[in-house]
Image (cartoon, rainbow over all chains, first blue to last red; front, side, top):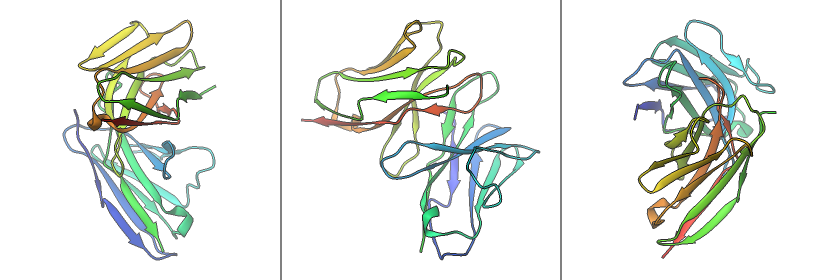
Length: 116
Length: 111
């Protein structure tokens, strides 16, 4: 299957600071990428849809000013958690569909964020 | 309605047995139904997927059964192995759009 990478795999930051998470499609181009967060023993919750060259689309209840998404190229999307608080501690995962005709979506390995 | 309901929440199966996980959806516009396997601390991995024009798809020990009229689909894992112990998520989407996930099933295979 296609490969999606994330960096970093885990990060610890202090409350009030910002953290950037990268999502890369390694062997295919992705005009769209999705960002999810997952709390322990829960399902994946879609946060936003990242669109290359345009603004991201955020799900209801997700603060766009807090979770900044940039999709600067066909292989890279970034999620920046601004002014992080302990309640932002979670597992953040990105995914990308293989192409417009193929519905298969591939997920990154996830980034564990801990805010102290 | 975008909801996908998944059951059971947890499942214990003996090694060599058949694991069955069920999902039901409401949105008849959904046209792609994947299953994902997730190990602790890892991202979900695509296991198998089906489109509504077929009633069954088999890949190795994994089979999806799809009932369009009942708006239900299920994952069957034959000859379940300890290495299959993981959390399984069903999902659904329309077109190449965002996935709607089920709540997950924690599967444990015991020797």
